[in-house]
Image (cartoon, rainbow, N blue to C red; front, side, top):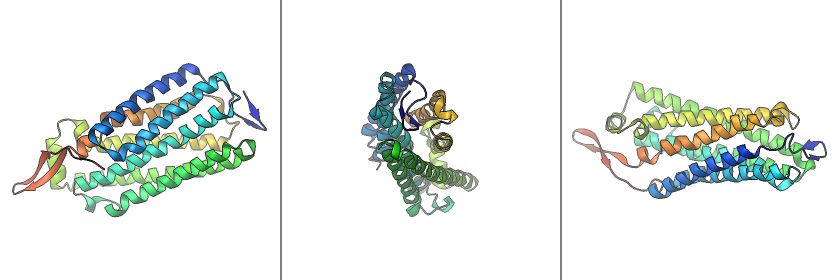
Length: 286
């Protein structure tokens, strides 16, 4: 346990096994994401890939802290990178909904016009990321910046919760509306899907699951920062792994399994005299 003024880096010695385990698990998922991204040229998933790299580096920071709990560098490394990585996940996730709505010819069912949908959510995510990263940077200055940094991080987390909550609502509303009044494209794609994970319905449920995981994690982090450095959550390492590591790994694995390119890229609907048909057309997905 190291103290800097009234601020304590750790109330425990970080568990080595857990840190190594999640370094390896995030490494495996991130490596597979890199393969999927390059193979399908799904450039919109670059933020998620970078977020995975941040997770790996963050848990490496915890490994280093296991051997030296008084070192500021590893502490800031794990604090900052694990804090902001989900905002990068969110950036990629936000881009999926707009592309899916466009693919299904379902703009009339969307809460927000397509030209604004992705822009609004990504702008909110950038704002949240900037606040959290700025707060983390202030905390890196030492004891004098810890309190102000924590407050700025807290604001960033509230912004993340608000935008992700609205994103989840927008996804549910669109899903309900297109189920009640399906488009020709949505019916054609649903009928042509080879499996759940290659269907637009499967992709929507992946959005739901990942959104809920990030929301729960953000609420956990918010409570953690409200409690402060001497709070119960920061004194017990298990909660970091249960409500952050496990949930964020789940987000990455979900999109390893239900990869957006399988829905948004490989089977594009084309109009014919008989209606909508699907053709295999593997092209770049921006």
